Each structure stands twice: as structure tokens, then as C-alpha cells.
View 1: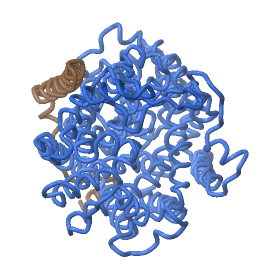
View 2: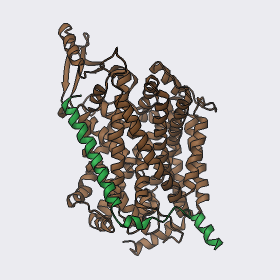
View 3: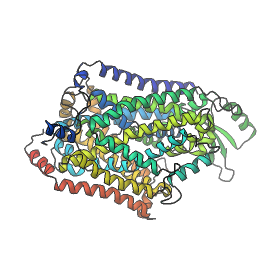
View 4: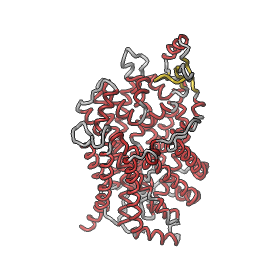
Length: 55
Length: 582
């Protein structure tokens, strides 16, 4: 691989890696993210309706 | 507007994994590296990143913003969202494309997904040992029935049938479980697994050194150079009759081959070395079409999927960072993993000449070249299994996303429960997939559906979306919607790009694409020759091609009839006249 190839490869992979890491960091460090977690239950409309009808 | 129990995502990370799962597919690991090598290596990447900034990311953000806003109005499908947000009831008819595209793509995508599962399974049981590209090509042709219509029907482990059934069951079980408990839960595990598998294979490929001592030029360094070098050096030979110079097969000269090639040219006046500078390559319209097309399809913009996925977000959920994060995950999978695995591995075992002979298309690389590569590799069965299982996971996370827009549309337009809408969509897609499965000769049905349904209509839908967002809704209103709940803000100059550059850039690319791929006009000069997609329909009429168009049309007509009969869409018109959604 030529020097130009190395530059293009490192710049390309580096830029998308930095973008991904920064995005994950911002997402995980935002407090509101925790508030949204409510567990995987009663998700489909059918299941919710069934659940409501049993109450 | 719609009185029903609303589905939603479980977490922001979950929706990002689901959207990136939708985007990460076979194209990241097969189509992208093939395109890069075919269209100039490093030069392609310059056009690729420009396409990402000017077209991919803006349309992606527009879809996220419109989707979440549509969800707040109580609707989840493209026809309803576009009609409500634009304030124009006729947009519900245009929005049908947002149903046609994912449903039609699903019909053949699940078929390719079954190839991946079948290849993974056959590698695992040690039944994939090839000595030549002819052998691996023959296996693929038999596996999917390329020779004759109906020849893939059967349930041996060397045929795709049983794997197609398994894929269908998996997809519909997951989609029935719903947005959060099905799609999100699966992607939460599948996406990290996919990245880990890719990293394991990447590590294996980069540590292979020189697998064949008789071919020292087949090494990792040259494999990476074939993929990434911005300037290309070709060995060309002269046709003594026409006096034209053409590259010899596999004529790209890499590394130490340069000295050998130079000595050849000294001894033979009919050979010469030509260097193509990356600036010359950037002047080729074909390169730009390929680069922008790749970024476009890779991010899944214009599929009608992101709009529907984003509609399940809450009002206070961020869309800007979520959109950026999902795009970044897709780009990392494509550039960082796909860009380092596929072609370097192929060059290591086949060399550039062997690779050029086999082809650089998605199916060539994925189902002919790579099986041969894994056959030649130590522990090839294990790594072959891991790679095709990785492709299978990537395909499932994508195919799941193709079903949700149709499910959402049926649920809201006909007030159906999920199990009813799943049953209806299941029936339609089974028929469509059986059509693709049966008409397997020359993969004509798959190819035609992919071109007109999975490419042409995507351009149209993407254009509709960006024009709706920028010119009908308006940038100022779109900006206000975007910044509600956002963790980061889109820079001011980017709104100008979204308002003007992206729509115009898309139109230019679309026109060039039609001229080149439909009418066969050579964009660098020369004679025009209509593509077979055109001749199959209008000059050398092909019945399978016409039936494929009929499948696309039937999905559209079915959707249009539902909209016509649906009280929901009449209500959208009524509420629209009051301006209640502005």
C-alpha cells in the first residue's frame, strides 16, 4: 500500500470511529437516557389490550 | 388522531441499535468494498464522504425529524406521516412508495438472507470445500437455482428452500412480538454480536501474512493497497489491430510487482504502465454515482423505514444525536470493518488477477469469491461459518425493519390488531418471496425487483422526503421540530445544505443514474445502449421482468385501495384542512 493509501485508510476509518465513539459517549452520558428504560414488557398492542382486559 | 395503545421504543440506545441494524446489511460487507475497488480506491472515499455529508446525513435527519413528529400526531406509516406533516392530503398517495419499497425489498432480501444462513450452516458442517472459483460458482448456482426456474425447489441442505422457511419464521415471530420486545430486543443482542464477529474475522484476515509462499505478492499490504490506494498503476497491453491500450486482467500493479512490471514493459513494446491519479478518477461521473449510491443505500434513506422507526419515539426523545449515532454505527461497520475484511482476504488467496476474473459485484464477492477464500484458509470452516453468520445477523436486523412500515400501515389504516396485520403482511410477502424463489433462472425476478423496487423507487421516495421537509414543511419549522428534546444541535450551515444543496444534488444524481442505468448512456462519452432493465420491458420483452413489475404494482394498488377505504386517511384530510397538525 502506498503512503496515499495509508493516509486515506487511516483518515476514513479514524473519522468514522471517532464519530461513533463520540456519539455513544454523548448518548450514554445523557441522564435522560436512564429515564426511558422501562423494561421489555407489554409491548405489542395485542398484549397490552389482553393485559388491560385481564385487569 | 388515532385512538390506540401506542407502541414505543424501550431506550434511546435501543432505537439507535435498531436503526443502525436496519442500515447495516450485506451492502456494508460486500457491496461497499466491491465499489471501492472498482471505482478508484481512495478516490472513491472522497466522493463517498462528500455524499455522506451532502445527501446521506441530511435525508437521514429529515426522516428522523418527520418520523418523530408524525408519531406525535398518532401515525406511523409514510402515507399518513407525509400527508399530515405536509398539510397536503394528496401526499398520502405519494407516501404509498414508503410501503411499496420495504415490502418489495423484503420479498427478495429474505431470500438472500436465507443464502447467508445456508452458507453458514454448510460451513459449520464442513461441507464447503472448493478448489476453484468455478466450483464455488457452481455451488451457488445450484443452491439458489440459477440454471432453471423452479430448480431451487427442494429441501436438501444444499438448496436454499429450508433456510428460506426458517428465515421467514424467525422474521415473523420477531415482528409479531412488536417494536420493543421483538425488533429492539433482537437488535440489542444481534448488533453487538455482529460487531464482535466482524472484529474476530478482521483480526484473522490481518494476521494471515503471506498464505502462499509461491505468490509473495498476495499479502495483506497489497490487499489493503488494492482497496485503499488513491492513485492506481495499471499494466496495459496494446491491441495490435486496433492500436488501443487496455488493462491486462488484474492489471493493477501493487507493491513489489512494480519492479517486475517495469522490466516487462522494457522488453515488450506492446506493454506499458499507466498511472491514474485520484484527481482524474474524481472527474468520472460513474465514480460519483457509485459513491453517492452506496452512501444512500447503506444508510437506508428513502426506504420508508427510518420514518416509521422514529415515529415510535417520544416527544422529548432526541432525534439529532440518535440519527447521527445510527449513521455513525453504520459507517463504522461499512468503512472500518467491511473495508478491511472482504477485499484484503480475497486478494490474499486469489490475487488481483483472480479477483478480477471472478468479479467485484455483491453476489460475486459474497457467494463465489469468499467461500473459496474460506476454503483455502486454515480453520476455514470456522471462519466461513462466523462470516456468513455475521451476514445473516446483519440481514435479519435489516429485513425486520422492512416489515415494520407495512405492519404499521395495516394497523393504523384498517384499525387491525398486530396479529391480524402480521398475518396479512405475512401472506403478501410469502407470495412475493415464492415468486422470487421460483423464478430463479438468472436471478431475473430478484434483479428486476431490486432495480425498479429497491433502487429506482428509493430515489423517488428520498426525493419526496427531502423536498417535503425542506420546501413544503420548510426549514424553519423543521428546525424547531428537530431541536425539541435534542441533546445536540445541527450547525446552522447544515440547514442550508438540507434546504438547498441536498435536494438539488439528489436531483442531479437521480437524472444521471437514470441516463446511465436505464438508458445506458455512457456519461464519459461514447454510444448509448439501453440497459437490459429497459430492454427486458420494452424491446426484448421478458415475461419474468414484466411479472416482477406486476408484483410491485400490485403492492401499490393494494395499498391505494386500503387508503381509499380507510376512515383514518379521510380524517387526515379533514383535520388537515383545519391546520391542526401545523
